[in-house]
Length: 270
Ligand code: NAD
Image (cartoon, rainbow, N blue to C red; front, side, top):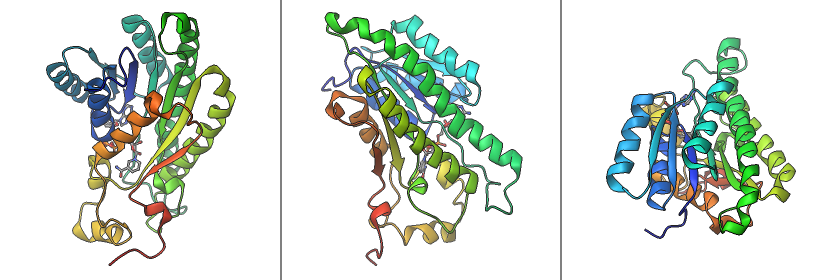
């Protein structure tokens, strides 16, 4: 353990599964106290238990949070401040990919609205309450504690490139995350609050694998992947750790692609 996040306090939304779970574990390994905020309280509790067993020097708390509800997002930030006195890292990572999300003609408005509510508004609220909490860290400068904070928003490679296998609402929501993140990064740059997007490529997590439920659907995508494989959640967790820690102290407003080269691909190796 190298302690890159010693004394830091992190909230990870979607912390019960996939990227969020692996990141919560890695943040704890690096010394952070972590709140795993997820709509699945049971899943978040399981994650918190793993952390407490492996890393007894830090505290992990499970919080039942629906990021599609502003009051829930505010409550989890309040919880961080109440339990730990501060918030240093906000990983707005929870997101959905609805099975009925399709092209412009077939996507129903209720699917569009639900996707925006969680994937885009949820990230906005996460940023809003994190910024308010991180502003309070300014007074900690002379105590040797971290000033400001790091906000990381999970977007997607589909915000960077078009896919002929459409999920229009999802793609639009992630494009919104990228644009919003850049602007927030500029607005808060002089407050010591860094805001970056993480753009994962296609991963072996329940979110995508439940959707790609046949070998044919998987192969339709795999052929376009330069490395010839889907990514692993832990590979995104390592990138999130970089963005959360002082290793990225001069990085803000980035669209940080961790996609095995997918967004740079024209012709891929056979
Ligand atoms: P996952 O399905 O493994 O985990 C998502 C977690 O979010 C789950 O624990 C789920 O319970 C939680 N969640 C869902 N709705 C929520 C809500 N309203 N409030 C709080 N929590 C909620 O998925 P993952 O692959 O780890 O995805 C994490 C993020 O990465 C998402 O934003 C997703 O869009 C993005 N992403 C994933 C991929 C991929 O291929 N898996 C690619 C690009 C981007």
